[in-house]
Length: 369
Length: 199
Image 1 (tube, rainbow over the protein chains, first blue to last red):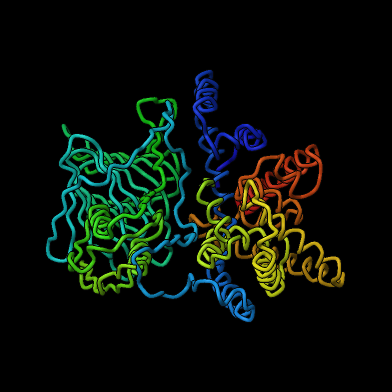
Image 2 (image 1 turned 60 degrees about the horizontal axis):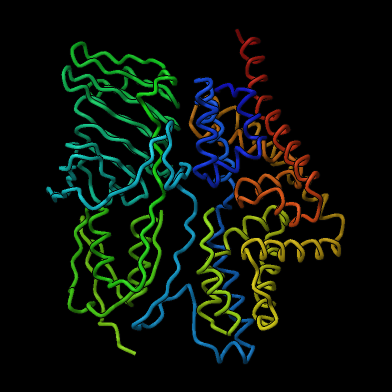
């Protein structure tokens, strides 16, 4: 059980701090960074306070909210249907698939909070590594049942996983995984350096494999780097908790790491050494991944599908000509892959099927009004 | 929470015009924060469902006379709060006692669960700890934590929503966080004692 510093609570009491956490501006960020400059110990305090603020936020989504909202809507509609004014207005039901039409305005489900991670968008920070995803440039190959995704560019690239997790691949890094993972677990093989932000799914634990190590993840964000010259691997936990063990001997030695702890695997001696990360080390900046936003305004659905294909690395099969005239306005965020797929297909009155690692979409052309 | 302001206002205007699609879209956009907030104010799920449904029916029926609120989510939460308080006034005080009992049983359960979780040392333990600590706060304190951290409202907005003055908001928030801190520290203290006893 970690001890929480008094000063962390003081930060949470500070209204300006909360204000900054929720809606950062250039000015407020500069001010807080200046404050952190004065004493490096403050960096850790800020990090912890941000974590708690985030936890307090994510704790508030009631588990059955989606269910409730569907029930309420059902009753609401039946009540309103007895109102003549309502019936004569245009048909609409956010819960069923309406007939396709040329224009479909759809607003996404507010997905239940599953991802942890605070949001800073568009602000350059000194102590936090701003991350602007550029999702399109990761080469994907389908190998047997798995996807292999390699960053062949010279800058880091972000890729999405179907469960809502995100991975930032450094240049040259690659991951290999089943597109939709397994039924009872989620596994991924990593070569090179990457940062992971893993969505919490208690029924399916997440495992990251490197050449010699396996990292068992419990809802967290962490970084894996391999020292090129000696082959040593470092796993550093930014938030949450992971368990690291050697592939050859998983039962014998399993190290559990929490935030700001790291483990070093020595390639020569095959030793796992745990040490605490020096928070004042400015060389490492904690990573904050901005939430995914794909905004489409009257965009051809073919373009949207292509975007999804690139972001997730999952091959799509559909007749481009059929959907050529379908335009969709929608805003996709941190939903899982299937939720996004559902939203887009509903918009054009199409259906999808997942076979193996690939998606097949069928439907009729969109009618012109 | 990011406010996408212009499209909200557009939706609202369309809804005022009688556009059912817009109405549905507004529902989708705001229902979850409404449920989250309503749950804090009204532990009775069925009642909450009724009140939220009524709220939307009333909105639809009176849409032509509605103004265009500056912040729609805030407006809806306030409207819901007003409804729930009015309903609360008509209810038996027994329901309040039921609620207190429920909270009491809940914390007893959480305490025993907590020890076994600590033994297993799962990641969940922190969140369980936090959740349990939150449940020890008064309902008003829990409400204000949600308003500040989940709904993301400023002190001014909270003051207007809860119909209190600005200073009360600061005080209540301060008390709530202090209480939370105490409750989180307590188990650590208990474990240390246990550890010492068992040593």
